Image 1 (tube, rainbow, N blue to C red):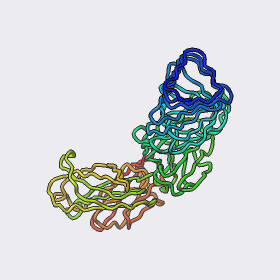
Image 2: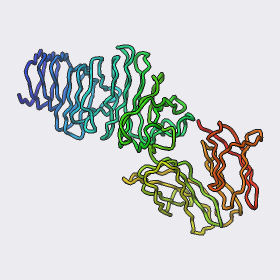
Image 3: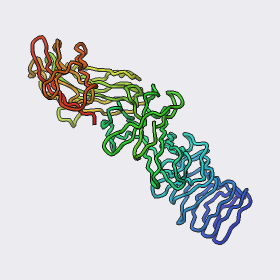
Image 4: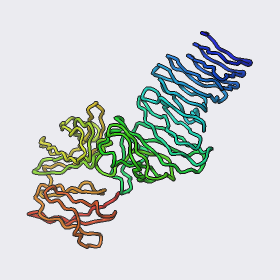
Length: 458
C-alpha cells in the first residue's frame, strides 16, 4: 500500500503489510498485531498510543527521517535501512524491546532524545554503514555490545551481564582525543600512554552492578601492534587508571580487549598501552632548543608514530606571525623512540620562537608545541639543558660537549647507583624511581654541571 499521508486520529489495527511513503502522524491508538510489518519512508510523529506486537517496522527513507512527537514510543522489532547520508534523527526518546537491526543509515541520538534497549532487546547487523551516533541506554541483566560509533566508524563498547534486571548503563563513542577534557599525561605508573584519537563514555545510570568492560579497536584506532600490551583505561577524575587486560580477541588490525576484572567506577574509557608499543598515535615526548657553535639546534623525541609523513618547523619573532623554516621526514609507523634534530643556520642575532607541527600521510596536521630561544650569537659557551623537566621517565642532556660522567642523587644527596645512565645518547632513565626531586652532577671535559630534575607521573 502506497500513501501520500498517513494520519491516525482514532484507532488503527494493523495486521497486514503497509508501505508508507509519507509522514506518519499518530494522534490516536496504533496497534500492530503478530506477523504484521510496516515500511515507512517518511517521518514518524507519535502523539498518541502505540502498541507494537508486530513482526517488524522498517525505516527505509532516502532522505533524512525523524522520529518524534510528544509521546515516547516502544517498538518491538525495528530495522534501520535509511540510504541517506543524514540518517534518522530522534527528536523524542525511543524504546526497542525486540531486535534492532542495523542495515543502513545512522540513528542520531542525544541525551534528551535517547535510544533505550530494554531488558528483552538485542541488536544485529551493526557496521560502519549503520550504528547509533550518540548515547544508547541498555536495561537488563545480560551482556550487551553497545551499537555506537561516530562519523563513519562503528566503535563498539561492551559490558558483561549486570546482576539485576533493572540496572541501566549508558554508552557513547567520541572520535576525538580525550586530552581536552581528560589529560592524557595524567596516568597511573602502570600505563605508558593512552589513546590520543578516541574514547568512550560509559556510565551506570541505574543500579549498583559492577561489570567487566570491553573496548574495541580497528583501523580507526591509530595503531595497535602488540595486543597483549593493551589495557582498558578509565578516567577516575584525576588520572587514567589501569583496568587491566583480561584477554584480547582478533588481530592487530581489529579486535577487542576486556578489563581484567569487573569495573567498580565508570565515566570515560579508552585504550591504553603498558609499553611504548601500540602507537595510538604519534606521541611526542619533548621538543627543545639550545645553542651550539652559535647556532640554534632544535631536537624533539617521539615515543611512537603512526603514519607520520613529516614534521614542519616554523619560526617567529613575536609568536604571532609564523614563517616556514624546514620540513623533516617522519618515521612513518614506528613503535621505537625516535629523536630528530634540525639546525637553524640563518645566523640571526635576534631571539626567536619555534613551532613544531606534524602531518600524517592522510594530510591531517597537528601542532605540537612552541618554544623560545635567546639569540645564539650572544649565548655563552658550554651550556647544558635538560628535557623534559618535569619528567615522567627519561631525561635528555642537551649539550655540545662530550659527557664523561653522570652522578644521580636523591633529594637528600644520596648517590643512586642503579640509575639508568646512557652517556653515548646523553640520557638518564628514571623509570625505576618514584616521583620526587633528584639531582644530577654532570661532568664534561671542560665543566661540571649541577642540575635538578623533578619526576612527576600523575
